Length: 228
Image 1 (cartoon, rainbow, N blue to C red):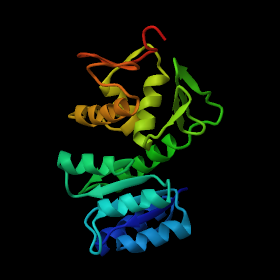
Image 2: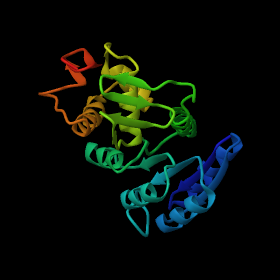
Image 3: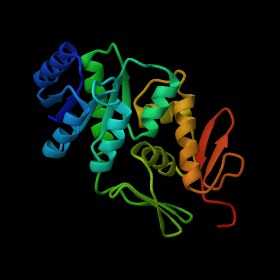
Image 4: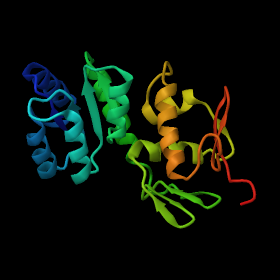
């Protein structure tokens, strides 16, 4: 059972989704507005938030940014907009996943389980070291030469997926399935965008990689830099 906050202004969608998730054993609270959702999240500390972008009082992306300022709660964006620009903007603002309307409740439930599963890595998982890079799944902290690197949830999950297979070339199909729980199909952009963000924070580029190397047509390999 998970505690879920639904932020959706359409009463029919809000009620049907609440009813269906409660039937599956979840504890569900709802809000039709962004500001109400912020108050609800702070008061109830839910396990996950389902956030519609088209809210009556404030844009959903702004709500997402404000949520990120007060809580680490996983956020799944629910949107009728399926263009790349909106999806990338939502992920950039801190969304952990997104679902495009119309959707099935089983689909949403699967996404909730996947997000919660990613957020509950075993405390026994050891820190991974690749040269001066350390990825610790217990604390979800990344350091480079002793300096902490600030990564979003998805950026951390992507780097962990690569670092845990140090030296192995990991396909984008595998990354899309493991990090985003999505079947492969037009997902290159999602992986590439997040990979570019991680590289920038590690002080490298695709043209001059140190830790994250693209093997054209195959995938990405995380490896210790030459000479380190």
